[in-house]
Amino acid sequence: MIIAIVVGLIIGACMVFFIKSKPKDNSVTTTDNQEVSFLKSSIYTLENEKQKLLKKLADNESLLKTIQSSGDTSSNSNDLLKEINKLKDEIEDMEDSIDDLEAKNKKIRSEKNEIEENLNNIEKENRELLTTKEDLSIKLATKVREAEKDNKSLTFVNSILNANNASDKDMEELDRKTWEIYSFISNSVYDCLKNHTDEAENLGYYAWDWRNTEKKTWIKNKKVVAIVGEFSAGKTSIVNRILSQDDPDALLLPTSSKETTAIPTYISKSKDFNCQFYSPDGDLRTIKKETFEMVTKSVLDKVNVSHLIKYFVLSYNNKHLDNISILDTPGFGSNSDEIIKRTTDVVKEAHALFWVIDINAGDLNQTSIKVMKDHLNGVPLYFIINKTDGKSPDDIEKMKEHIKKTAFDNDIQFKDIISFHKDEKVEVLMKYINEIQIEEQPPLMRYILDELNSWIKKKEKEKNDLRKERKEIDDTIDIRDDNFNFIKNEISSSADTIERLVKINF
Ligand SMILES: Nc1nc2c(ncn2[C@@H]2O[C@H](COP(=O)(O)OP(=O)(O)OP(=O)(O)O)[C@@H](O)[C@H]2O)c(=O)[nH]1
Ligand SMILES: [Mg+2]
Image 1 (cartoon, protein in one colour):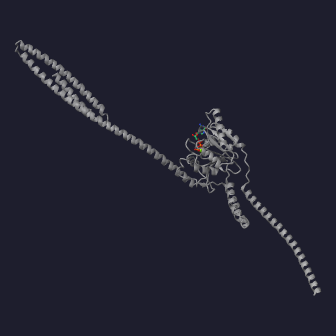
Image 2 (cartoon, protein in one colour):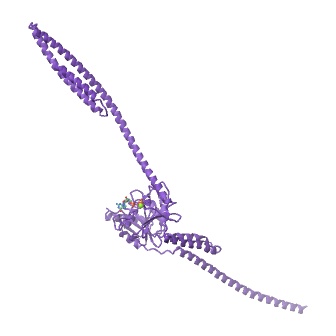
């Protein structure tokens, strides 16, 4: 009876367990394992119970045999027989239960295998989906970056197109006066000279150039120093060093380890900070500093702004910029032809060039050498060996020797080689800049007047030559007149003589 209760409890518990523990999520395998081990332990318990019953049965059967062999036919042996039959029934029931549980176990194991297989498939799909998701995320991030870049490019171009003319009272006055002089030269002076000299045609162009130069206050009467070189050599960082050493709040120019500076940028002195750009048409326009900060080569790689901007002009109240204008330029890198043109066009206005070389780059490359020879010949040249932080004096000396040799081999004249790095005092560099002597170029207006004077002198000389020639001709005519009169007199006296002789003889 007790055994029947035990079996009943086990089977009941199994059923409750199966119902309650049906898998709901992906903890399927864990649940199945629990089920299987629960079933196993139930089967084990039943087997134990069955062994106990079998033992009891064997004991009862042997007792029955003993009773029967003693000839005892009392009710004891009948009771024992009943007990034995009951035990047999219980054992049979238990075996059925064990068979049931084993069948269930088998079924669960096969279900478990099936579920595990499904799980593996799902995990595989999951992994594939994750890879696809990662790919998509990378593509999306690239697209977002591109869209941001496009957005920046458009915002930048929009700000440039809407920039206002940079004019204060002094600028307006300068503009008006230079316009009056230009108009006078290209109309009145031209009208006077047009029938006398071919040069008259060019006067208007000269006057226009003169006007533009007078209006470029950032370079007029200043020593212009251009910083040039390959990309990422540290050119802009040098300019930033000059701007920030004494003014930590100064607006710095963008720098990075990628190609950065896209448009030549002048920095010069003024009372207040100004951010402007100079257009190819000769207009100076003001922009916000945020617009300037936005511009790097990567932002401008899809839009060509060279027809809108020739260069930027930033003005700072910085003592290092007294009488000096510094030109930061795009480095020569991937899109060299365009950059070389944009840079060398502007660099021609410089009084000296500082060619920056990253000490880690090893040497000047062929593009640099070609640019120096083809475009910048004649402008005083200094080399800056940059990024020397962490380098030994020996390394720096070796690099200097290397550059000297390359310059000599390529017939490149240079003034000096300076070593520098981002934490160096700017005075190291300013010493060289301050020593640069600039030949005072005759102002363009003086050039025009000189042209006119030389034309007047030429014409006076021509007039004098003509006068001299006329005098020589007059003298010749006089001599010829004299000769002619002499001959005429001779002829007439000869004719008289002949006439007289004829009369006498006939
Ligand atoms: N170690 C070291 N790194 C420097 C130094 N100067 C600049 N750099 C780093 O070099 C990288 C390029 O600097 P930039 O100033 O942008 O170089 P750039 O010549 O103006 O480059 P482009 O505008 O692309 O032509 C940046 O990551 C700077 O931080 C220096 O003296 N030492
Ligand atoms: Mg730069």
